[in-house]
Image 1 (cartoon, helix red, strand yellow):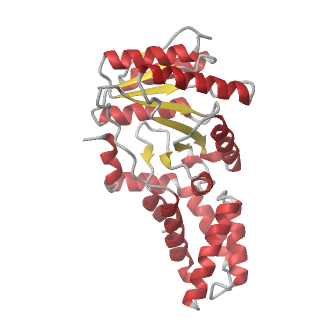
Image 2: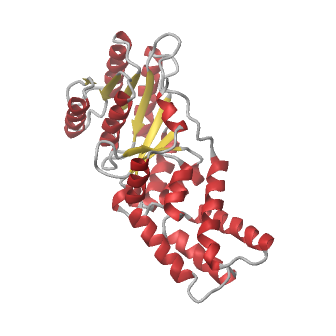
Image 3: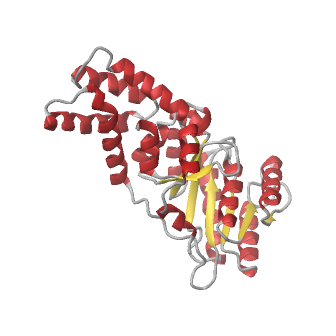
Length: 320
């Protein structure tokens, strides 16, 4: 059974509770703003919609996504003729959920070795400080808990702290970490990681990469080189390029997503640190704007506080 059988299951009560807790700051902020937006109003009219637009934009949903949501609610109000303000949360939940469902497929392929026994390869990218290495450690834990054999590659050789942190996570989770000396060629580390993973019949190999090089051309060239080397060891690798974004940075996360999308092909997003911020609306905005599926969200510091992203559960927790 593949790791992504997880995606097909409903969240446990404990996971649902953790999600509610992790999004509590965003939920309180959004509900407070919506309450002020509809104060003294009995129905959803143009003024309420204008106020709601401001609420969503200031909640880091993003301008384009906000306008799409408002258009959907306008159409709903026009069709239903009279919509009371007490119904606004329910309509928001329904329309945001429907919009996200249109953006991309939520069914990810199973993380399994290919027909030749080669591991599934994930290359993880993102700027320093977003929780990239921590996310890799939590992913390794998630996969090992699912019975997968995991190898980690410390290809962020520009920062000694990154290698040391990945080493600590490897020991904590009980998975091998392939590394070289400080300043080594990152592509060489990726090569060694995949070669070791293949030789030891690993199911998954996760490669950490440098958070920032001094210009975009260097970043593009470095990531392209790593991809080329990995493809030689495991044809088709990387199977996934996961961009990690810090949800607490709000609109800055949009800019990071834009820059990394130019530097390499991003296939999935992990959005971290949602528990410490009221800017959880960024999950909706980034997902909608870039049409890249959000695959994981970080809602706490614990080893189990990286959750597989479920759109329905997220929207229910945020607006329910």
